Amino acid sequence: MNTITYRELLEMDNYVLVDVRTPKEFESEPIPNAVNIPVLLDEERAAVGTAYVQQSKELAKELGINFISKRLPEIFKQVQELSSKNRRIVFFCARGGMRSGTMCSLFQALGYKCMKLEGGYKAYREFVYKSIPVLNEKFKYVIIHGRTGIGKTKILAKLQEMGYPVLNLEKIADHKGSHFGALGEKRKQSQKRFETELYEFLVSNKEGYILAESESKRIGNIYIPDSVYDSLVSGYHLIAETTPEHRIEILMEDYADAPEEALRECIMKISRYTSKKNTENYLELLENKKLPELAAELIKEYYDPLYQKSIDKYQFNHKIQYATTDEGVEKVIEFLREKEFI
Image (tube, rainbow, N blue to C red; front, side, top):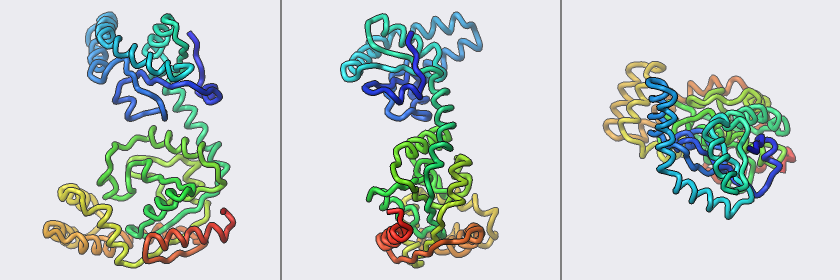
């Protein structure tokens, strides 16, 4: 059986990665551009695992073979289609073991050009983990700071649309970084997926700098790798300021459509950091659907005092003031020109 490391794979072209793990594994821990053709479905793998632990290894194998045999026609059709478009197929599973080995042996015997990724997803993860600090050394970071609701993320999103190298850490972390940060997010947070998307960004960035938003070491349940966090701390620091009206408008765009119960849960999470009187006021404003007023109170009584501690840690290289997101974008571009990044 032919095997290949992920580093060697990067030197190849005209191939397709086929992830034979379950759909759940594929979704939560992907290798970019891989195609999922599961040997076992989620519930099938669970049943095999239960049989292995509670009954016997032999029974687990028999059960697995029965599951796979029913799906072989579908698997064959999918592999055949991929083979018609790619010179070589590279199978992988969690550790480069039985699942990918079985698929590779089967299709090699049928005459297909295929290989097995050595070490599977685990080896890929190790490669990504070791590569991030090396890749990160090439870049100087430009960091935008500002209180909650000033629109830092929206400014960076527009800059990204315009082709600037923006590292949106909150987007790839699937969290906005506060106690309300999980609201509106569609994916469950994943450290492995976060690091994969971070690696892909660093590999693809052809500029000598990176634009990013100020972040703490942790975003929700995600931890920023030390090398990247150190770059966030040591980069150029811009402090952004906007009008109170613009801040309320941005918070309404981000959170007004969230379910009332979810907003209530978030208010209760921050109750330990604010007075009982403030908490009761927040809940009353929420119940009466006075969301702009709620946002204004949270800014004044909770977020601004909290964020001031973060602001006090830095010496800022530049201040940008704006009344609209577009104006904020132009101010950042002016800074980049001044520092000869562009």
